[in-house]
Image 1 (cartoon, rainbow, N blue to C red):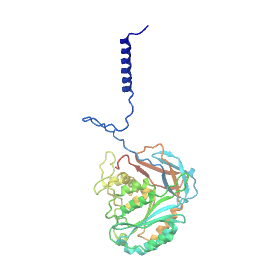
Image 2 (image 1 turned 30 degrees about the vertical axis):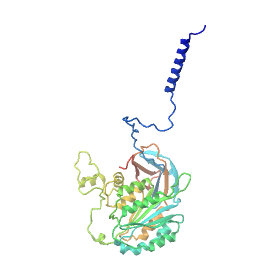
Image 3 (image 1 turned 180 degrees about the vertical axis):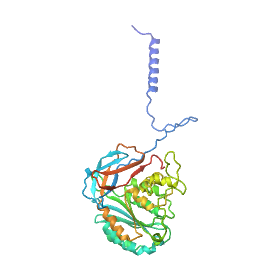
Image 4 (image 1 turned 135 degrees about the vertical axis):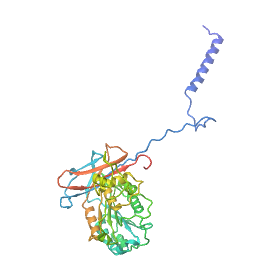
Length: 383
């Protein structure tokens, strides 16, 4: 049967409308950005969540001694256990004194150390031969009112010795913390040991008084970055006077807060006093103070700075004001570095942000282990 003309026309119009409607449902993608209509608010991107810094590898040198204080160098990886916030970790790299060293020697060049300058100059040969070792590299940084790179990284021990021989004192200032920050930055670029490559152990050796004058950097911030960068700090404490031996005994408990205040909570139900604080937390508990310093990077900490730096990173502080010479201290540090275990792991099973407590233990009785206490990861902007 032949359809009426008006029906054909209606069907054609209907088909065209459906075609137009289909184009609206399935539009083509615009070829460029669409400008907003006047008066229409622009949609904002959703707020970004806090970015958490991930630590790919944690390296913690471990010094093991027996009951007589002698170094123990007969252990294997299976003899060690590492926990990160209480969670056992798998050791991915293990070595005994073999990984070559990257060292930054920080030396005070303030006029206050003039009486000790000849001894410091002579120590260059020990620092080069004993501390660097045959496969090490080292740089030298001097500091007073300024921080000066005196020798870039070199494997040439003679260059290190020459740099020390030519040391001169300049001004009376001592920007110790600023110098430490620069040293950590320099070491951060050196390759770390991994499961597939030996890399280098990052070490800072400081020859200085435990005094900072004029630094903009806070000690806690330096220590936090040193931990994240796997830098171990050793310090040789310089003393320019014999008055310390003749002066009356003084309270040498490290202070991390202003006088009359307390940086830690009191025992529940007690009134906090200097006596109760010392009894509760222990006099001279450098490990707890080192952890506190890293967690409170904005606080100004000056007392026992060198000891805190060594404790926070697993190194050692050696004072030289008695019968311990600078050369003897350097020789002791070198002996430890080349008889030290290097343990590495990739953190797993722990919270990303906040303070991570590291515990290194040995599965043999009668042995004492020294390693760094942990590291801190900040979430988002630096706290």
